[in-house]
Image (spheres, rainbow, N blue to C red):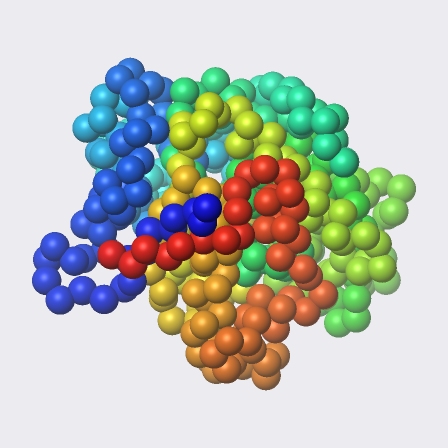
Length: 372
């Protein structure tokens, strides 16, 4: 049976059709009320955005989900896990300050903010999965103990995973720093030519494995734990993975972590909303946001994380690319039907998330798009 994915496009001709109202109506149409029981503690899994980033999900949209959960008798809280890199979200204090500065104050979202893995990313639970790469995975404790979860994801490209949506949000977003490191451990970054010596990678390396040698960044292979955060943090995109390592294994490890987070909730106690808007070439962990690759597409909702990511992927690739974006720089992927994610990150294979996620039993790539 095909998984249903409910979809609203970006068009609006009257007040009832504005995006704010569409979020609440998607919640109803997808049957998310069935995931919420009276007095459930409901984690609203969200990325609060790095300081300086502006592509993350608008807090006023999150408020609609919070209010819907409350109308069902649930007790919502907004949550995310701390980062592995040394940015503005690497501990709960800085993380909460960043979230509030990015608009996620109680007065806006109508719910408390709870950092899922504690003040210094040490609060987690082991979840047994017995899969190809992991016997068990580390899931942030406040996500583990929540009765239900609504996963709200900004769908965009990603420099290693290919793209990021519901599956990546489950995997990286529900893991403490140690779990993030386990997922990234196959990565071995290398500094390429044209290093500008900006030292952003030095500031963000959690292991102090990077130093300046002869005026350029040098990554000590003995100290590097393969977390890959320097790849995201390099303003000039000169730090890259060593692609000859098994990058497919990284994506599989990430998907197994997503399965572990998914497994913490009973059937129909976890649901997904993807915002296919501001479809940037990099994740929201970067302290900037590049121009969108395609025009805004819309919002999707489903109980199936594989189906919603596949539908999001297909909808993005059906669009004509924007020349004034990284697609124009690549001079590829601009035509409708071409793979936008491969165009900006040609050595990635994001489809592994969908193929392996289906194999693990998280959902189906066969979906029915229900346009509302």
